Length: 439
Image 1 (cartoon, helix red, strand yellow):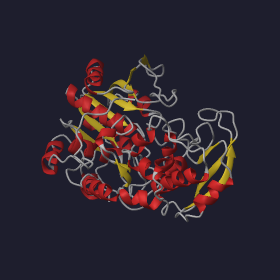
Image 2 (tube, rainbow, N blue to C red):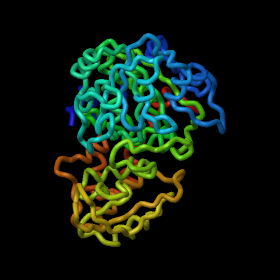
Image 3 (cartoon, helix red, strand yellow):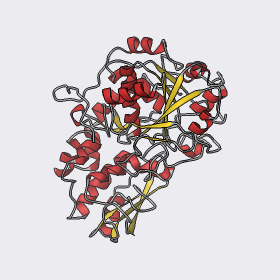
Image 4 (cartoon, one colour):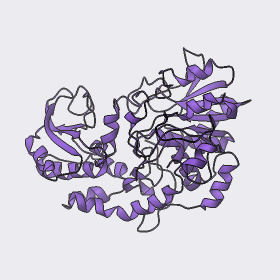
């Protein structure tokens, strides 16, 4: 993992840097197709594409769809590079790189691949390196675990004028694509490049942020800056937040927004095809639970990697029906827990049969993934004497501080752990509100 981003936390608290909303909005507005203040009507009016506002019941159109419908006008005369992966697709599942490369109205000259790679051939913690794409002949540059001046030098060497970002996120702080976005924005500013974000839905809705807020001393590539564990934002909204709150030198930023998207919509309401953003994110159901159950990466239990239901199946050797019974007694909203047994084909407990639980979300509007993840940690520790944190305290990097781990070790209940982060979460929600672009 990358070393943490430099920054000094306030004594006894979590920093939420504020550099002046008015000044940040003014700087962004000089370059931006998105609004300088939040609001669905102003956002739609200033967005590239059809130029019409989102309407209830209207088919969702992604940022790319609106950019293409407008003839790529904001990219006219620019040499373009795009940061994308297999999720950068059209409604008829053509990759946008293939579409743009074949269109004379846009001069696409480079592709930048994140973790797992541009075409998605690498597993977790891997990338594809530098190569020429066989389908288009375009040079593909590797951005994974690159930031600052080294990444800026890649943008400079590629010869691009504008860097475009189009990747499907899943709504959790520790999913690395939003930090690829952050690193690329920072590097584009250093290299003097323009930056454009093509928006896509948050698949688990854009409702209120949930979970603990990262403390800067725990910043890594799974969390560069102090946002909540489930952020409830789209990538365009996050880009505006990053530019206005965290980047020392804001990048010339444009956001091409969606039309027809509402904050209450889950992914299957979008009408868009789902392409796994990473090998262990096979369905939107995975994304629904991920912001909570990914915490099991910080334990000695399997988080379901190597099964057909990663992050929905959790377990270890020696666990039996008592865990499912223990967590079911809590009566958590929107979810049932089934005693389950499985044998991962890779990762933890490869080839061994383990016991645990399967999560069944029956009311996704009531379901709170982060609270559920904490409750599962608390009850696993009670139900199984073999429970242990990973020796590198990875759980602290996932949750953003020592608080969750130390409180659970001290015997705190799930409700007590959740209550402990509410002050910091409320402060983040106030900052977040200024950058929301959809009603």
